[in-house]
Image (cartoon, rainbow, N blue to C red; front, side):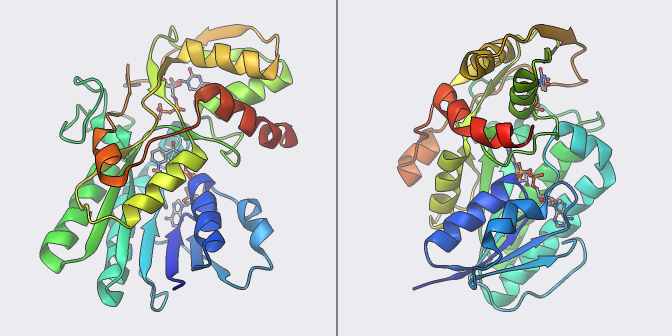
Length: 310
Ligand code: NAD
Ligand code: UDP
């Protein structure tokens, strides 16, 4: 039977893909977004879909969307330059916004999924990172506006689960990329692809030896949907365990684009994590989920979108 979902952050990269997926299964979706880092262009293709509606609003102000079966809370700036620009807004959406959306789930007895992040692990001392690792986060550094908001959000979700019996889930999402990743929001894959397509130097922060593990968007969305239908209330890592140095990532982008761009080295941002790789044993066991798309294939699948943004 079709269900109705509230998706916050629906005009963003992941929110718009999740919305497509839910509508594709025949569900009804109310998308909510304040358009601070996302854009309505990501939802333009749904203009004539009678099962989709959209409200421009800030989830930091309490609201009542009417009865919904599931709340997917994805609203939050997500790229480092954006959450540094919107520091206070990021802290507020990760605290007040999370609580407002939990209250909707509590009122309607709805399921709830919080989009949390590998950033909860900070600059991890354990590698790869299992969900049981508590993290190594600078609580007052520049990234703290995002990291601590997301950690607080997880605590708030668990409190609503424990004290108000809300049926919650927490996805700890690792770096995800694909079409609709904002070409100008400063994340590494979008920066590198746009620079490569323009023939500009690829900007390597630091010496490029830091690592990340990149998940293609379709794989991530599959994991989110499976998690939302599971019975697990503690956090679950969702990401691709293939780990790359940032230098490897730049080389992969040059190969896939056929670009002859040079590399330019600039300062590493403060507290930039040195390594990141999910231990996905829990997701494998619980959801029978694992990513299928490797980095080269995912980059190829993303090219057309970024070309259209030149
Ligand atoms: P995005 O910036 O493309 O999407 C976030 C959306 O939230 C935007 O459309 C923005 O306008 C909206 N938003 C922000 N504050 C809001 C508010 N107060 N009220 C209503 N809407 C608001 O980023 P994304 O990559 O799609 O990230 C989506 C979620 O997934 C975020 O919560 C992010 O922290 C989490 N996440 C993403 C990644 C990733 O690699 N993409 C990794 C870890 C976690
Ligand atoms: N990075 C880079 N060049 C860029 C953008 C990012 O070298 O143009 C690096 C950044 O310093 C970090 C990694 O790539 O080590 C991933 O950055 P991103 O902002 O995509 O996400 P993060 O995992 O840091 O939140």
